Length: 77
Image (cartoon, rainbow, N blue to C red; front, side, top):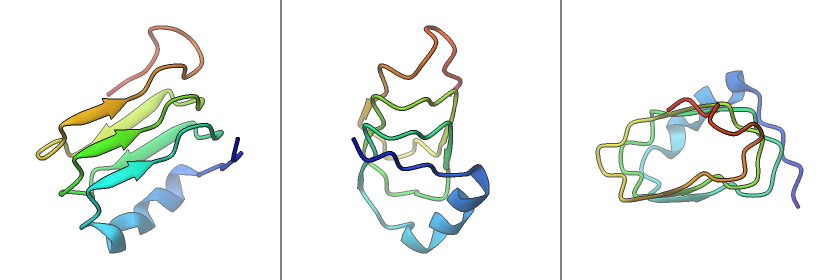
């Protein structure tokens, strides 16, 4: 477990990585995640976090793993 805590304001700085195709942030303590700037993103794993808000571009997205994120049925995409 990594215990990464990523404030929403910090995800805005991810625009410098807009060419990333694979992101694995599983097993952390992330609550909100905005990856709309990652236009080339194809694979995302955010399992076992505390995510309740996830924002994605989704144009190239092929695979997403987002289970075990706190309360059931509360994840907003």
